[in-house]
Length: 389
Image (cartoon, rainbow, N blue to C red):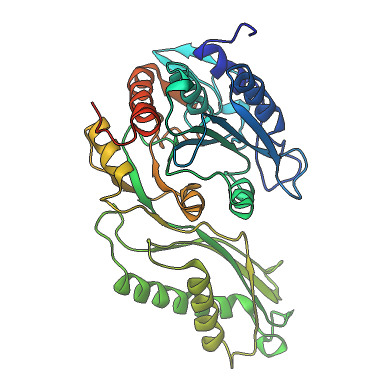
């Protein structure tokens, strides 16, 4: 076996390998280099490693690495991509692991490359011959944009296991449910004309004003119908995020486009919600004289909820000493749930650090995260029927 890098060297190597995921093609880098790095390490440790290219996405792949055999088992999952960055706002090189103030700085330290190294390190404590059920390390592509990696796994029906933990930044607190995400473009087309005479056109900005009023009434109805006290914001939210319309003060606005972000609670189906949105606004604007069009900015992320009495939830509550919580941000958890696994989100980073300049992981979070992972592996793979110690 080749000399294998220790934990901080692994984190450094992962941070040093760019894997920015972006909807802007000039910023999008792919993740294959990170996947190959992980595959080389895990091959050395005796994992059965499979690199799965993401269909239709050049330079992007998922990795499934399995230690042990048989049904059941535990998946430790993380995404390999990061968001874009502005290096002018960083105090140090985003692609070089920097240690200062008892923190590890670098793009992906909290969200979430460091977790992949921690999962590898925790598994090194065990002899896989002891495993009664397998350990599966899963690394995915494009979580930060299209979820194409997670969707490809669902299409392939893999991996299969009993339980899955995703190491997104939760501050060592287990998360068993989160809201979904739906983003939509709403476009009104009217008629441009000279501003001196309103009769010469049909002002799309004025039409959008009326449409927004109706949209906010629809939001009020949603919030009256749906409520979950587990969330800090216990209702579905709808944000008016961006609006564009017109081109000059002396021209009647002929087209106006609004972009919205909708965060549904668990139990609210994204497809049904989108149909409800389209139907409500289409009926409202039917006799307005405007053409109304919708464009899904991306397919959306379903909400996720793992039952409070699920074994993995109760196990992680015992290991952390913290009741499982709800989060407002989306993850790949609903896709792993679709594969039949009880899924939980639990990682060492803080969500406040995600997508920020000078992203960091506090060094004090590493020992407790490793201890949690070791106990999880022992309980799920070596003694799957035994309570945690």
